[in-house]
Amino acid sequence: MRLRLAPIAAMVLIGGVVSVPRAPAQAADTLMPEESTAKAKQVLSDMINAFGGAGYTDVRESQCHGRRAQFGHSGELTGYIDFTEDRRYPDKDRTEFVSKGRNTILAALIGIDGLDFAHGGIVIAVYNGDRGWTLDKSGVNEMPVTSVSEFQEQVKRNIDNLVRLRLKEPGMSITYGGSDTVDLKPVDWVEIVDSEDRKFRLAVDHQNHLLLQSKVVTSDPEFHQLNEDVTRYSNYQLKDSVWTPLQIVREHNGRRTAQFFFDSCKFNPGFPEDFFTKEALSKRGVEAGIKKAKADNN
Image (cartoon, rainbow, N blue to C red; front, side, top):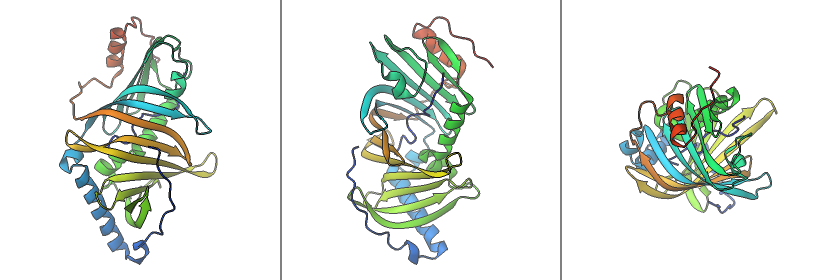
């Protein structure tokens, strides 16, 4: 079994989108380095305050329900699936998918090979730091090492983790990227480079200071190329103490890969301490009628 995709919400706080020519960036190249950093930090501060200030930064857990649309290699819509994603930042994630009746595309939607959804069922993927498990009709199974490694990389790219927890890390460069127009709205760009040379670009709405778009550029040594992952955020609504985008679109190297429509989000719901463990997953399997879980190779 191979879990190819890491968790759904790279950023919970974070649409077909109209693409328009962007105006040239302004002001960034006229600032001294100290001024550029100060300007960028001010834009980030305004964005955090727009998200909810302490109501945003104090979030350590989230629970969101929604629907995901998946797209094929040619950009065609391949299907939808409902999900519930639970997170404990920075590196714990539990996503549950439920299929009612025949669903031949479910495996492709969530990125798991070798699972039988011909008559519906439940699948849960759990990540906990450097461990991971899946639950399907066969029981609880250890995740492949490659899947866990992919999740750990996405933890480092996660915008919530970046803004809440990582900005003061050693080796972090923060600069102002200038003004621009994104999706017909004026924005300020903030550019962040971490110690492992991941390049983040955040487009912050100049008027309401909410995040409209994020880009993460990383090097792919296997194929000797740069990969660009773009996330677009829209339909912000106040959920608990946080202004939350209820629509998220993801693109990889210019190709749309997924779109998310959230029905609800809760923050700091207070998960049980063992919620993101193999034992809790086995218990959920029993509740779902999977009486005998397959033994893991520890």
